[in-house]
Length: 431
Ligand SMILES: [Zn+2]
Image (tube, rainbow, N blue to C red):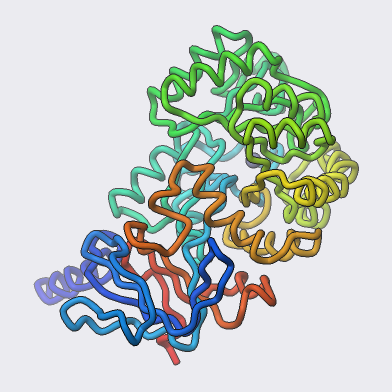
């Protein structure tokens, strides 16, 4: 009996782990395929990939052959797109444990929350994320666990603890003085901030996240108020770039956005109170703007239940609509926009709900999709391998029913997910 159980467990283990660790050469046949670069919808396409999970060929099914007679996965009733990318996630964050409720969550528990959310995010069609802030390097462990095939999740670039000033948005201000508590990323002054960049890189960060201005979910500050100075941000950007890392700056405030861009920061997160000068500077410097315009509704409707402080709800009421208006204005002004949602503030796996908001606030569906594919890949530094279905790119493929160019909300119901040539889910085969 024990041996039978053992064999059963072995078989089960192979079935469960195989898609995570081994990719077979193969092909996917798509009824429709969105070329995200041109915005053209192509009919009846075959995508061929090798044992490394890299796309080797792509073209009309009639004239493209699968390798060694491999049977193509039949998605002839579906529309294929490249795997989506969210450039602003907090996979180790639990949306139901904000404010004081979050103090009861240990670092090991946070890592396990991350494992759950990585799976939810991948299965929602997001095959890559940039994670911008986590405690105890849980994001580094999560990234490495996914890369090793231990757990299921998207490709990750991670920041480790976000850098910020004492008492700022990236500090932890919930406890009184006698607890002598501060967040891991607190660093004041240019040299302390440089040292913190070095420390964060030492422990595995792929990028640096900083807090340039106050925020919504922190205690005792205001989103519009500057926190890091221009001088501090210049030191951070120079040190990070020297070490081959990009920098993402949380910045709601008008002045902080401009200081961060002038300091050479690579992306502005939230961008809520950006003005015309800020937009012009972003265009001039090639800085990406990220607007998390879906989660406002969640904060106002569910935030109090989730433990968010009353002051956070009040701050959101003041800033949410302005952020959406400035998103529309920045888009119409031709600024570079990447798709980032701040998942963890709202439930993981709902990332695609932001597409509908972006279109509602003036963006064309193809531009919203580009923000989550080729633009996001560019911000991550992954243009040569992710964000498009092309030879030499990862076989990271998703499929939906319907046409996302006429109804972008079909991306909220992704039915097929492939990562690196391995099928993660295929709801089309169930029929
Ligand atoms: Zn965030």
